[in-house]
Image (tube, rainbow, N blue to C red; front, side, top):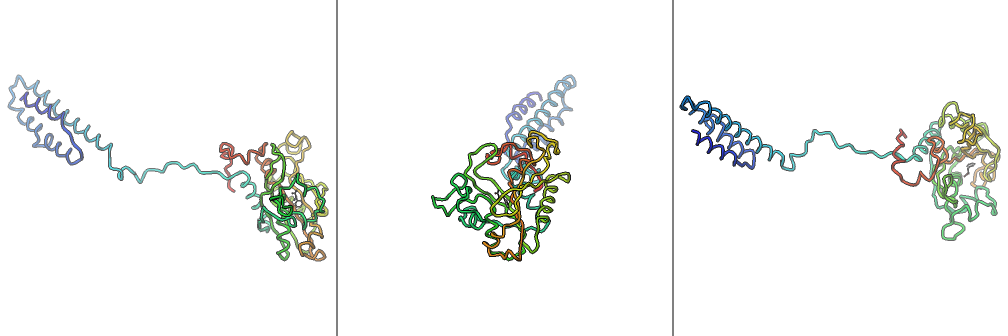
Length: 339
Ligand code: PHE
Protein backbone atom coordinates (compact mmCIF):
# COMPACT_ATOMS: atom_id res chain seq x y z
CA UNK A 1 0.00 0.00 0.00
CA UNK A 2 2.69 2.47 0.99
CA UNK A 3 4.60 1.70 -2.19
CA UNK A 4 1.53 2.25 -4.29
CA UNK A 5 0.91 5.59 -2.57
CA UNK A 6 4.49 6.69 -3.28
CA UNK A 7 4.22 5.59 -6.90
CA UNK A 8 1.08 7.63 -7.37
CA UNK A 9 2.62 10.64 -5.61
CA UNK A 10 5.49 10.63 -8.12
CA UNK A 11 3.03 10.27 -11.00
CA UNK A 12 0.82 13.06 -9.75
CA UNK A 13 3.72 15.48 -9.42
CA UNK A 14 4.64 14.87 -13.04
CA UNK A 15 1.11 15.41 -14.36
CA UNK A 16 0.80 17.86 -17.27
CA UNK A 17 -2.30 19.19 -19.03
CA UNK A 18 -2.45 21.54 -22.00
CA UNK A 19 -6.11 22.36 -21.86
CA UNK A 20 -9.26 21.98 -19.82
CA UNK A 21 -10.19 18.62 -21.34
CA UNK A 22 -6.85 17.05 -20.55
CA UNK A 23 -7.06 18.35 -17.03
CA UNK A 24 -10.56 16.98 -16.55
CA UNK A 25 -9.32 13.58 -17.75
CA UNK A 26 -6.61 13.68 -15.08
CA UNK A 27 -9.12 14.61 -12.43
CA UNK A 28 -11.30 11.67 -13.41
CA UNK A 29 -8.30 9.33 -13.53
CA UNK A 30 -7.21 10.13 -9.96
CA UNK A 31 -9.95 11.76 -7.98
CA UNK A 32 -13.30 10.57 -9.33
CA UNK A 33 -15.20 7.91 -7.36
CA UNK A 34 -13.51 5.17 -9.33
CA UNK A 35 -10.22 7.05 -9.71
CA UNK A 36 -6.85 5.69 -8.60
CA UNK A 37 -6.67 7.71 -5.40
CA UNK A 38 -10.23 6.86 -4.46
CA UNK A 39 -9.48 3.14 -5.03
CA UNK A 40 -6.72 3.32 -2.47
CA UNK A 41 -9.18 4.83 -0.02
CA UNK A 42 -11.42 1.83 -0.64
CA UNK A 43 -8.52 -0.52 0.08
CA UNK A 44 -7.82 1.28 3.31
CA UNK A 45 -10.05 -1.04 5.29
CA UNK A 46 -7.63 -3.89 4.51
CA UNK A 47 -4.70 -2.10 6.06
CA UNK A 48 -3.49 -3.61 9.31
CA UNK A 49 -4.75 -1.74 12.32
CA UNK A 50 -1.33 -0.75 13.61
CA UNK A 51 -0.51 0.81 10.20
CA UNK A 52 -3.81 2.63 9.74
CA UNK A 53 -2.65 5.86 11.35
CA UNK A 54 0.47 6.18 9.21
CA UNK A 55 -1.14 5.02 5.96
CA UNK A 56 -4.21 7.21 6.54
CA UNK A 57 -1.93 10.21 6.84
CA UNK A 58 -0.08 9.31 3.62
CA UNK A 59 -3.36 8.76 1.78
CA UNK A 60 -4.68 12.15 2.81
CA UNK A 61 -1.42 13.76 1.72
CA UNK A 62 -1.70 12.05 -1.66
CA UNK A 63 -5.25 13.26 -2.12
CA UNK A 64 -4.32 16.83 -1.21
CA UNK A 65 -1.24 16.80 -3.44
CA UNK A 66 -3.32 15.55 -6.36
CA UNK A 67 -5.94 18.26 -5.82
CA UNK A 68 -3.28 20.98 -5.48
CA UNK A 69 -1.49 19.83 -8.59
CA UNK A 70 -4.73 19.95 -10.56
CA UNK A 71 -5.47 23.44 -9.22
CA UNK A 72 -1.99 24.63 -10.19
CA UNK A 73 -2.31 23.26 -13.69
CA UNK A 74 -5.67 24.94 -14.06
CA UNK A 75 -4.13 28.28 -13.17
CA UNK A 76 -1.30 27.98 -15.66
CA UNK A 77 -3.62 27.78 -18.59
CA UNK A 78 -6.33 30.08 -17.32
CA UNK A 79 -3.59 32.76 -17.44
CA UNK A 80 -2.98 32.09 -21.09
CA UNK A 81 -6.49 32.32 -22.42
CA UNK A 82 -6.88 32.68 -26.16
CA UNK A 83 -6.91 36.35 -27.34
CA UNK A 84 -10.62 36.66 -28.03
CA UNK A 85 -11.76 35.63 -24.59
CA UNK A 86 -9.41 38.16 -22.97
CA UNK A 87 -11.68 41.08 -23.71
CA UNK A 88 -14.32 41.40 -21.08
CA UNK A 89 -17.03 43.40 -22.75
CA UNK A 90 -18.64 44.28 -19.45
CA UNK A 91 -15.50 45.95 -18.11
CA UNK A 92 -15.66 49.74 -17.82
CA UNK A 93 -13.69 51.54 -20.52
CA UNK A 94 -10.25 53.01 -19.99
CA UNK A 95 -10.63 56.65 -18.95
CA UNK A 96 -10.15 58.93 -21.95
CA UNK A 97 -8.73 62.36 -21.21
CA UNK A 98 -10.99 64.83 -22.99
CA UNK A 99 -9.50 67.95 -24.51
CA UNK A 100 -10.54 71.39 -23.34
CA UNK A 101 -11.52 74.35 -25.42
CA UNK A 102 -8.94 77.05 -25.99
CA UNK A 103 -9.54 80.00 -23.63
CA UNK A 104 -9.80 82.39 -26.59
CA UNK A 105 -12.50 80.18 -28.13
CA UNK A 106 -14.34 80.11 -24.81
CA UNK A 107 -14.36 83.90 -24.69
CA UNK A 108 -15.23 84.30 -28.36
CA UNK A 109 -18.09 81.80 -28.04
CA UNK A 110 -19.40 83.61 -25.00
CA UNK A 111 -19.30 86.98 -26.78
CA UNK A 112 -21.09 85.47 -29.77
CA UNK A 113 -23.66 83.91 -27.48
CA UNK A 114 -24.35 87.17 -25.63
CA UNK A 115 -24.91 89.15 -28.84
CA UNK A 116 -26.90 86.43 -30.53
CA UNK A 117 -29.41 86.72 -27.67
CA UNK A 118 -30.21 90.28 -28.84
CA UNK A 119 -30.52 89.34 -32.49
CA UNK A 120 -26.98 89.58 -33.89
CA UNK A 121 -25.99 87.02 -36.49
CA UNK A 122 -22.43 86.00 -37.37
CA UNK A 123 -20.36 86.53 -40.51
CA UNK A 124 -16.71 86.09 -41.33
CA UNK A 125 -14.33 87.59 -43.86
CA UNK A 126 -10.89 86.77 -45.27
CA UNK A 127 -7.69 87.32 -43.27
CA UNK A 128 -5.77 88.19 -46.45
CA UNK A 129 -7.43 91.37 -47.63
CA UNK A 130 -7.06 94.23 -50.04
CA UNK A 131 -6.29 97.78 -49.03
CA UNK A 132 -9.79 98.98 -49.91
CA UNK A 133 -11.65 96.75 -47.43
CA UNK A 134 -9.18 97.22 -44.57
CA UNK A 135 -8.52 100.94 -45.03
CA UNK A 136 -9.94 102.69 -48.10
CA UNK A 137 -13.65 102.02 -47.60
CA UNK A 138 -13.22 102.75 -43.90
CA UNK A 139 -12.19 106.33 -44.50
CA UNK A 140 -8.49 105.95 -43.76
CA UNK A 141 -6.72 108.81 -45.56
CA UNK A 142 -3.88 107.60 -47.84
CA UNK A 143 -1.23 108.90 -45.46
CA UNK A 144 -2.77 107.33 -42.33
CA UNK A 145 -0.08 105.75 -40.12
CA UNK A 146 -2.01 102.46 -39.79
CA UNK A 147 -1.11 101.75 -43.42
CA UNK A 148 2.51 102.15 -42.48
CA UNK A 149 4.96 99.24 -42.68
CA UNK A 150 5.26 99.38 -38.90
CA UNK A 151 1.69 98.25 -38.41
CA UNK A 152 0.57 96.33 -41.43
CA UNK A 153 1.90 93.10 -42.87
CA UNK A 154 1.99 93.29 -46.65
CA UNK A 155 1.95 90.20 -48.81
CA UNK A 156 4.88 89.94 -51.22
CA UNK A 157 5.64 93.66 -51.18
CA UNK A 158 2.34 94.31 -52.91
CA UNK A 159 0.91 97.35 -51.10
CA UNK A 160 -2.60 96.36 -52.10
CA UNK A 161 -2.60 92.92 -50.45
CA UNK A 162 -2.41 92.96 -46.67
CA UNK A 163 -3.13 90.82 -43.65
CA UNK A 164 -6.12 92.55 -42.11
CA UNK A 165 -5.20 94.67 -39.10
CA UNK A 166 -8.73 94.71 -37.72
CA UNK A 167 -12.04 92.91 -38.25
CA UNK A 168 -13.57 96.21 -39.37
CA UNK A 169 -12.66 94.97 -42.88
CA UNK A 170 -15.63 92.61 -42.60
CA UNK A 171 -17.86 95.67 -42.03
CA UNK A 172 -16.95 97.03 -45.44
CA UNK A 173 -17.54 93.67 -47.12
CA UNK A 174 -20.91 93.09 -45.47
CA UNK A 175 -22.19 96.63 -46.01
CA UNK A 176 -21.26 96.43 -49.68
CA UNK A 177 -23.36 93.34 -50.29
CA UNK A 178 -26.17 93.40 -47.70
CA UNK A 179 -29.28 95.52 -47.67
CA UNK A 180 -29.99 97.05 -44.22
CA UNK A 181 -31.13 96.33 -41.60
CA UNK A 182 -27.81 94.69 -40.70
CA UNK A 183 -27.23 93.39 -37.21
CA UNK A 184 -24.11 91.25 -37.18
CA UNK A 185 -20.94 90.35 -35.37
CA UNK A 186 -17.69 89.31 -37.01
CA UNK A 187 -15.22 87.27 -34.97
CA UNK A 188 -11.77 86.67 -36.40
CA UNK A 189 -8.01 86.82 -36.29
CA UNK A 190 -6.10 89.99 -37.12
CA UNK A 191 -2.42 90.77 -37.67
CA UNK A 192 -0.19 93.69 -36.74
CA UNK A 193 3.50 94.06 -37.11
CA UNK A 194 4.30 94.47 -33.43
CA UNK A 195 7.19 93.29 -31.28
CA UNK A 196 5.98 90.27 -29.29
CA UNK A 197 5.78 90.81 -25.54
CA UNK A 198 3.52 89.88 -22.65
CA UNK A 199 1.03 92.50 -23.81
CA UNK A 200 1.36 92.53 -27.61
CA UNK A 201 1.50 89.90 -30.31
CA UNK A 202 1.78 89.96 -34.07
CA UNK A 203 -1.60 88.29 -34.30
CA UNK A 204 -4.62 88.47 -32.04
CA UNK A 205 -8.40 88.18 -32.19
CA UNK A 206 -11.27 90.60 -32.36
CA UNK A 207 -15.03 90.53 -32.40
CA UNK A 208 -16.56 93.32 -34.45
CA UNK A 209 -20.18 94.41 -34.16
CA UNK A 210 -22.24 96.29 -36.73
CA UNK A 211 -25.81 97.54 -36.58
CA UNK A 212 -27.26 99.53 -39.50
CA UNK A 213 -30.91 100.54 -39.68
CA UNK A 214 -33.13 103.59 -39.81
CA UNK A 215 -32.83 105.88 -36.75
CA UNK A 216 -30.01 104.04 -34.98
CA UNK A 217 -28.60 106.33 -32.29
CA UNK A 218 -25.66 106.49 -29.93
CA UNK A 219 -28.09 105.59 -27.12
CA UNK A 220 -28.71 102.24 -28.87
CA UNK A 221 -24.97 101.64 -28.99
CA UNK A 222 -24.52 102.47 -25.34
CA UNK A 223 -27.42 100.24 -24.33
CA UNK A 224 -26.11 97.25 -26.31
CA UNK A 225 -22.63 97.66 -24.85
CA UNK A 226 -23.93 98.01 -21.32
CA UNK A 227 -25.96 94.84 -21.75
CA UNK A 228 -22.83 93.08 -23.06
CA UNK A 229 -20.60 94.26 -20.19
CA UNK A 230 -23.05 93.09 -17.55
CA UNK A 231 -23.61 89.72 -19.22
CA UNK A 232 -19.90 89.15 -19.66
CA UNK A 233 -18.52 90.48 -16.38
CA UNK A 234 -21.48 90.46 -14.00
CA UNK A 235 -24.50 92.55 -13.08
CA UNK A 236 -22.46 95.01 -10.94
CA UNK A 237 -20.22 96.01 -13.84
CA UNK A 238 -20.30 99.68 -14.81
CA UNK A 239 -19.25 101.14 -18.15
CA UNK A 240 -17.60 104.41 -19.09
CA UNK A 241 -17.42 105.85 -22.61
CA UNK A 242 -14.47 108.14 -23.36
CA UNK A 243 -14.37 110.23 -26.55
CA UNK A 244 -11.87 108.85 -29.02
CA UNK A 245 -11.04 108.81 -32.71
CA UNK A 246 -11.37 106.22 -35.46
CA UNK A 247 -11.48 107.20 -39.15
CA UNK A 248 -14.60 105.08 -39.75
CA UNK A 249 -16.81 106.23 -36.86
CA UNK A 250 -18.05 109.66 -35.88
CA UNK A 251 -18.44 110.28 -33.02
CA UNK A 252 -16.07 107.64 -31.68
CA UNK A 253 -15.49 106.33 -28.18
CA UNK A 254 -13.52 103.86 -26.18
CA UNK A 255 -15.31 101.87 -23.55
CA UNK A 256 -13.93 101.04 -20.12
CA UNK A 257 -15.53 98.71 -17.62
CA UNK A 258 -15.20 99.02 -13.87
CA UNK A 259 -12.29 96.81 -12.83
CA UNK A 260 -13.94 93.60 -11.74
CA UNK A 261 -10.86 92.50 -9.81
CA UNK A 262 -10.97 95.33 -7.26
CA UNK A 263 -14.59 96.34 -7.90
CA UNK A 264 -13.51 99.81 -9.03
CA UNK A 265 -11.52 100.72 -5.91
CA UNK A 266 -8.18 100.63 -7.72
CA UNK A 267 -5.59 97.84 -7.93
CA UNK A 268 -2.38 97.04 -9.86
CA UNK A 269 -4.46 95.33 -12.55
CA UNK A 270 -6.34 98.53 -13.47
CA UNK A 271 -3.26 100.62 -12.67
CA UNK A 272 -5.18 102.06 -9.71
CA UNK A 273 -7.72 103.80 -11.92
CA UNK A 274 -10.63 101.47 -11.20
CA UNK A 275 -11.32 101.17 -14.97
CA UNK A 276 -10.07 98.92 -17.80
CA UNK A 277 -10.48 99.61 -21.49
CA UNK A 278 -12.11 96.83 -23.48
CA UNK A 279 -13.28 98.17 -26.83
CA UNK A 280 -13.52 100.89 -29.43
CA UNK A 281 -16.85 101.99 -30.90
CA UNK A 282 -18.82 104.76 -32.52
CA UNK A 283 -21.48 105.74 -35.04
CA UNK A 284 -20.57 104.55 -38.53
CA UNK A 285 -19.21 107.56 -40.42
CA UNK A 286 -21.61 108.60 -43.24
CA UNK A 287 -18.63 108.49 -45.64
CA UNK A 288 -18.21 104.80 -44.86
CA UNK A 289 -21.88 104.09 -45.49
CA UNK A 290 -21.65 105.88 -48.85
CA UNK A 291 -18.37 104.08 -49.73
CA UNK A 292 -20.23 100.82 -49.26
CA UNK A 293 -23.33 101.86 -51.22
CA UNK A 294 -25.67 102.59 -48.29
CA UNK A 295 -27.68 105.83 -48.35
CA UNK A 296 -26.47 107.79 -45.33
CA UNK A 297 -29.54 110.04 -45.43
CA UNK A 298 -31.81 107.06 -44.81
CA UNK A 299 -29.65 104.82 -42.68
CA UNK A 300 -27.38 105.24 -39.69
CA UNK A 301 -25.61 102.70 -37.57
CA UNK A 302 -23.09 101.88 -34.92
CA UNK A 303 -20.02 99.67 -34.84
CA UNK A 304 -17.74 98.36 -32.13
CA UNK A 305 -14.65 96.20 -32.02
CA UNK A 306 -13.20 94.38 -29.05
CA UNK A 307 -10.02 92.38 -28.43
CA UNK A 308 -10.71 88.78 -27.44
CA UNK A 309 -7.31 88.44 -25.72
CA UNK A 310 -8.00 91.52 -23.62
CA UNK A 311 -11.34 90.22 -22.44
CA UNK A 312 -9.92 86.76 -21.77
CA UNK A 313 -7.11 88.31 -19.70
CA UNK A 314 -9.66 90.15 -17.63
CA UNK A 315 -12.03 87.26 -17.24
CA UNK A 316 -9.46 84.59 -16.41
CA UNK A 317 -6.67 86.86 -15.17
CA UNK A 318 -4.09 85.67 -17.64
CA UNK A 319 -1.25 88.19 -17.39
CA UNK A 320 0.87 87.17 -20.39
CA UNK A 321 -0.88 86.87 -23.72
CA UNK A 322 1.93 84.80 -25.23
CA UNK A 323 0.44 81.93 -23.20
CA UNK A 324 -2.41 81.77 -25.70
CA UNK A 325 -0.19 80.66 -28.56
CA UNK A 326 2.35 78.43 -26.81
CA UNK A 327 0.22 75.27 -26.74
CA UNK A 328 1.24 74.45 -23.19
CA UNK A 329 -1.21 71.77 -22.05
CA UNK A 330 -0.66 72.64 -18.39
CA UNK A 331 -2.09 76.08 -19.16
CA UNK A 332 -4.76 75.04 -21.65
CA UNK A 333 -6.01 72.14 -19.50
CA UNK A 334 -7.21 74.55 -16.82
CA UNK A 335 -10.00 75.92 -19.00
CA UNK A 336 -13.06 73.76 -18.70
CA UNK A 337 -16.32 75.47 -19.35
CA UNK A 338 -19.65 75.17 -21.02
CA UNK A 339 -18.96 77.15 -24.17
N1 PHE B 1 -11.16 98.50 -35.53
C1 PHE B 1 -10.85 99.20 -34.33
C2 PHE B 1 -9.53 98.65 -33.78
O1 PHE B 1 -9.05 97.70 -34.28
C3 PHE B 1 -11.92 99.04 -33.29
C4 PHE B 1 -13.24 99.63 -33.68
C5 PHE B 1 -14.20 98.89 -34.33
C6 PHE B 1 -13.52 100.96 -33.40
C7 PHE B 1 -15.42 99.42 -34.69
C8 PHE B 1 -14.75 101.51 -33.74
C9 PHE B 1 -15.68 100.75 -34.39
O2 PHE B 1 -8.97 99.18 -32.85
